[in-house]
Image 1 (tube, rainbow, N blue to C red):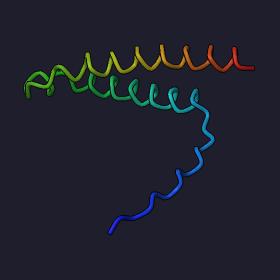
Image 2 (cartoon, helix red, strand yellow):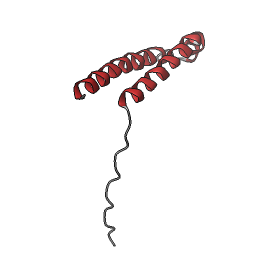
Image 3 (cartoon, rainbow, N blue to C red):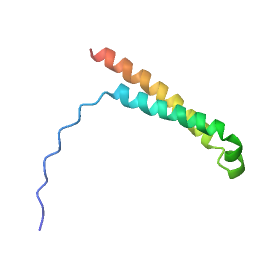
Image 4 (spheres, rainbow, N blue to C red):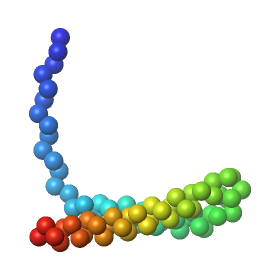
Length: 75
């Protein structure tokens, strides 16, 4: 017995700049928390969390720039 495929739902209306900027802020908070707990991270072998948060922040800043540029070109 084969089910018929249901139609795809309509896409949500979201502001990509807001989504990426929110994620970027969360990466920044995570970086601050990681830096405040640097000795614990070093002792537990999780020092890689610091550069992971930093790269998340940098990629988020770049993504926010790209999204804003794309939005301004579309307008």
